[in-house]
Length: 613
Image (tube, rainbow, N blue to C red; front, side):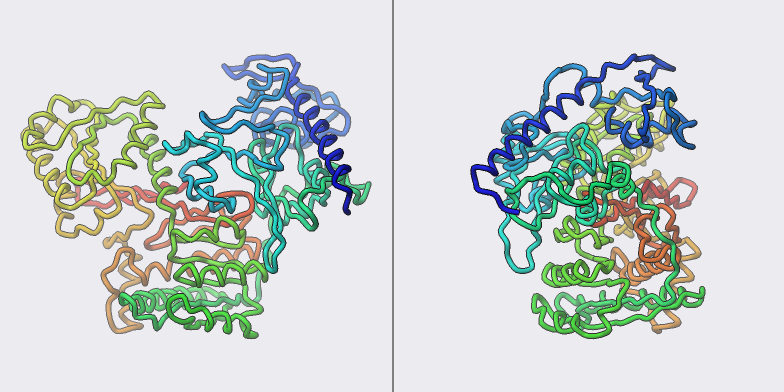
């Protein structure tokens, strides 16, 4: 539907006023408050026709929050029923002002919170970077910095950034969409009306959208079928109401069993650059071991394995995707470089096929394709999760950071130290000098575990520190000394014996415990099948292929094509990788944030703790 330019402006003004009034109404939470066991609540009586979702929108809380504090509401609501609604931060902010107020990061450009034609807001999540955010929203780092000058000095979780709105240019194969930051009191139905869409259109464009993720401040992608400048009220079925639209946010998923699972493994198996073909061959061989195990357990599988060409030449891959075998797939695994991943991503999106990216960490496709599962964790995401697990695990220990060596972990160390300060946890810092064995003594505790954390991960620094700590321990047996480090420490095989003598911790998204019977069984099977042992790589590519295949085949077998809604129930005994997939936004795919805490204890044991959740 098209309007003259002047009339379009009139509609824009009307919408701004309407949304502004709605926003203002959201600030008025004039309900009685009570305090129970230190928690503040609003007292609220259920009105005719109200459901939990509508009430949650009114008070800026989640449905889960309401049910947690009102267990009797789980079986349904009655008119006049009294609920205790926990007072959220958003609600407190609302009470402090009678007009719309937008809190921006220091140095951010000011913008009308109801006018998202030019800019919208993004709240920084744990582990995000300006570069990643710019790729997510199809803009540039410099554009983000222009609107948020203070971001040049770094960004933090919870910080609000102003992002330039995507300008729609209709081109062949390009998706037309823009972004929308959810405002107070908005619902799926109201947002869809704002953009002249059906609620189903918004849900399809945001596969991660649910009751939990449709929250104030979260961003959603809005599809456009005509000009993005035309905002008119939704003129669809009058019978569709809020309740019907809200049902779309509940994804129960279907566990319909697939009679036959069709899988394609697509790799550049003949590309000898850097001997990559040897590693990929082992990945394929490990993948086959998992397929065999899957079939022995009663699974039905048709596996297609193809060589897809070398380097950035994607002609072979593109031709392959036109074959009949590729048209009925349930799962694609493969692609190594960005060019291959882009081709496979587009194919998976057009055919609605689950696509597993096994190796790449840096490609941006996962941020914009809801069908993608990225196995190799993003460095920033892992560091962010590690910092939080560190706080939870070691906040009661005596923490001593040791500067020196390459200091190559200072960015990560700063993240941990900032988190410690925010939570009131003390720590000490000392320089690694020749006098460390004496200067560190004054910082140690006799009644707590002393955790020593170096700011360098290199082997020479580690060897030097191990020697000094063992000297301190032998001279002061009443102290409990422990050392905490980094994933690369598992590669320093000549130092393993010293790990047991001191007691060494490290975090890593992957780890192989050679004493684990499962590892022995895998190595025996690999040797029987292929007449050799796997290459000595970190990670081990054969086990990488095995773990990946076992996880996704198990998920498809148990929960069918909708397994993404049952990820918490997908349990596999992986050998090397920790698996925990999370969506990075409402429209993108899943990134693995699995994490192990590994401990070499002084009794000669290896304790591998899954800290993924």
